[in-house]
Structures are given as C-alpha cells and as structure tokens.
Image: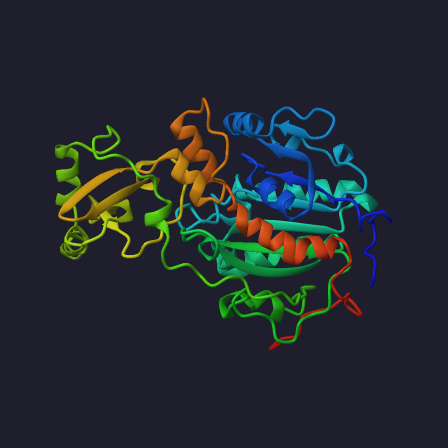
Length: 392
C-alpha cells in the first residue's frame, strides 16, 4: 500500500483532519465526520449561517475554528499543518441556470480563485486531497471552459483531478444533482471502464482534454435513485393547523394551474390514499403559475430569497386538497439532517441555510468510498501522472 505524501505516519489510525471552505451551516462537516474525518477549521461569510452552525455544533474552542468572513481575507499561513483534506462548496450563483451565467469570472463563483490562492500560499503544506462541489451547470458554463479552467488551476497546484456527479435522490427523496471535483497529489490508478452513473457522457470532456491532468478512480456504484419517499418524509400537519393556506389562497393556487397541472391535482384528490407532492411557482408568459411535481420526490431545495425559490407542499387524497409552505424541519430532513438543531431560528434563516447547502448522505458516501481511502493511501496509486488522451 502506497502512503500519500504530506500525510503523518499515524494517519492510518487517527482521524484525518479536514478544512471546510464556504462551510455554511455545516452539513459538509456532518457528512465528513460521519465517514471518519475530523473537521478542525471552517469558513463562511454569512453571519446567519454561522449562528446556525454554532447552535448545532456548540462552541468548540481549541478543537475547531470557525472563521466568519470573506475568503479573500483568509491566508494560507492560517491553515494547520498535516491537513488531510480541503473541501470547498464555492458559491454557485454565477454557474446556476437560475443565475446570470457569468461563470468563474463572476463576483460570487469567482471566489473559487481565493480558494486556489489559499492552497498555493500553503506551499508544501498543501493537503494531499481537495474536493470541490457545485451545481452541474459548472460542466457546461461557457461551453465547458469554466470546468476545464478549474481543473487546470488545480493541476497547476500539483493535483490530478477526477470529475463526477451525484444526485441527492440516491439517498433522500429530493432531486438535487451536484458536480464534484476530487484533486489528488498522488492520484489512484485510472479506471479504464469508469462508472457511467458517476461520470455520464456529458461529463467526459475533461478526460478527453490532453492539456489536463485527470484520473478516474474505481468506485462502487452509488445507490439507485429513489422514486418515492416524500409522502413519508413530509411533516404530518394536522388538518386544522394554521400552516395550511386559507380557502382564498388555495383557490388562487388551483386557479393558476394549467389544464395538465389541474388534471394531475384532480387525480391526486381522487386517490384512496393521502399523497404529498411539492410545487414551485413559475412565471409563464408573464403570468405567475404553479407547477406540481408528478412524482413522490421533492424538487431541488433552494435558498428562500425570491418567491419562485420557495416550495409548497400539496397534500391530496380521499377527496380533499390542502396546500402549505414547506417547513423548516422538512428542509432539514430532505437534506439528510433530520436531527439538526433548529431551536430559536427564524424560518427563512433555516430555509436559506439548508437551501444553500450540500446533502449530508451525499458527502458521507463520497467521503467513505473515495476521499478517506484516498487520504489514507488505500486506493491503488497511479504508476505515473496521467494526461488525458483524446477519445479515451
């Protein structure tokens, strides 16, 4: 077994340490620590997110540091020695289909470059493994050039890069596809027949670019995508609760539905069992309308800034229909953090925190199957640095 560089000799028995950039409310930490890492340093600029983080994890002075502030102010000298992993969930605003698509040149997604700068400033103290997470829009932003640029930037720091995608619905009833870049100073051997579930055809461009140093680790297949589960996960809100919309608001909801959507709701209403579906408000032809998902899966949770980003829950069956906003606890459950401490928090604060986070079981699967073995040198090392071959 080959031991990776920059790893202390006791790393096989001790928990490797991790730094959590753009940490938000700490869902990445939950996933990493469930897999066997110890997160010792975190950073985010949002005070509301730090409040949630501290309420949940407590004040761990001496064991963990949460640097609240702009990553532009973070310096490499602040990072601890013998760091095993650096994780960065940098802002997706400029890469998302819902954003302006400014890419890595945008003011928010461009914070990626400060993460790169911090790693460069660490010099020979760089962690052996880095992981980046973002929306799948990174793969197509500026015709794929933004993804190639990100891979190239990590190459310049000495990392070979793997690129893969995972959808949260493989673990929870929420459709939430995300892109992951895994960089390794000493990469594992390249898998000649990579798992197509993790690296579908639309994600193969970086591996065919001869100017990029890439690898594809041999990984097990993730769980199959869920097709049901929202009805069971959703809160069982009593019929008389004030959370349910009143008759006037519900009538406006129903009245905005297209014929196809109205038929879908009617079929649910006639059902013998109670079903729950999520709905988004859209603007079609300049007119606000509601659209109900056809399956028992939540749509992708988003931040609660802007009316169209909020999801409603439609409960129908046995001749009845009720509608309400999704609750804070439902957000937590759909992100794999059912036990997260929500006491004393504002609802919109919670929705924003969870809507801008990474699903916990996705992180723990990736960490358990890939990142932890990679840090510990348990994946078969590559014989030599690999340059991609066109057509590979």
